[in-house]
Image: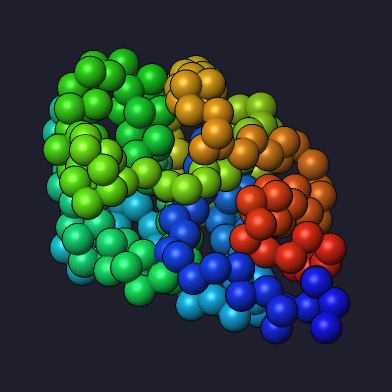
Amino acid sequence: MTPSSPASFPAASRGLFISFEGIDGAGKSSHIQGLHDAFLAAGRQVVSTREPGGTPLAEKLRALFLQEPMDALTEALLVFAGRRDHLQQVIEPALARGDVVLCDRFTDATFAYQGAGRGFDLQVLSVLERMVQQRPELGEGALRQPDLTIWFDLPTEVAAERLAGARAPDRFESEPQQFFARVAAGYAERALAQPERFARIDSHRPKQAVWQAVRQAVAAQGWLPASKVEG
Ligand SMILES: Nc1ncnc2c1ncn2[C@@H]1O[C@H](COP(=O)(O)OP(=O)(O)O)[C@@H](O)[C@H]1O
Ligand SMILES: Cc1cn([C@H]2C[C@H](O)[C@@H](COP(=O)(O)OP(=O)(O)O)O2)c(=O)[nH]c1=O
C-alpha cells in the first residue's frame, strides 16, 4: 500500500475543527464540499456546518441576524448565542467522537464583521468569546478554537464582481466595498495575531488553483494525503 492511498491514511482519530473565512464572495463555499469528500475518502467521519447557524435554534437566529436591522452589540450577542448552542449541540459532540468538523465561518468572522467592519469594541467581543468558548477540559483558561482556519483572501472588488447578480444580497452583502475593506483588514489582523492557526489562500485565481491550495493547506497538517489532487 502506498503512503498516499486513502486506506493507509487513518490520520489519527482525534477530532479536527476546521473553519473557513473570508469576505462575502471570496469563494469559500465552493471548496467546503470538496474537503468534506476528501476527508470521507480518507476514512473520516465528517460534519459540515455553518455559522451563523448549525442547530435549529441557531438557524432561527441566523434568519434574524441576516435580515433584521439591529445595532452591532445586538449582532454580536445573537451570533454568540447561536455559537454557544452550536458548540454545545453539534461541534463539541462531533469532536468528542473524533469527527472532522468543517465550519463555514466561526468567531474570526465576528471579529472581522462586527469588530473591524462595524467598529464594535474588540474587548467586548473577546469577553464574549471567552464566555462562549471556554473549555476547562482543554486546560486552564483554554478556549475552543479551530485547529485550522482556511482564510480565503482576495481584493474586495473581485469579490464584489463575483457576487454581482449571483444571489439576492443579505444585510451584509449589501454593504459598500469600504465595509468589506475593513472586514478584510480585520481578518488580516486576526491572522497576524494567531499565525499558527491560519492558512491564507490567495483566492484571486481560478477555482482549481484555489482548490489545490486548500487541499495543500490541509495536507501540510498531515490530515490528508499530500499527493493526490482531487476536486
Ligand atoms: N476562483 C473563482 N473564480 C471565479 N469565480 C469564483 C471562484 N470561486 C468562486 N467563484 C464564484 O463566486 C461566487 C461566490 O462564491 P461562493 O463560494 O458562494 O463565495 P462565499 O461562500 O465565499 O461567499 C459564486 O458565484 C462562485 O461560483
Ligand atoms: C459568523 C458570522 C457571520 N457574519 C456575516 C458574514 C456573512 O455576510 C453573513 C453570512 O455568512 P455566510 O454564511 O458566508 O453567507 P452566505 O450563505 O450568503 O455565503 O454573516 C457576521 O457578520 N458575523 C459572524 O460572526
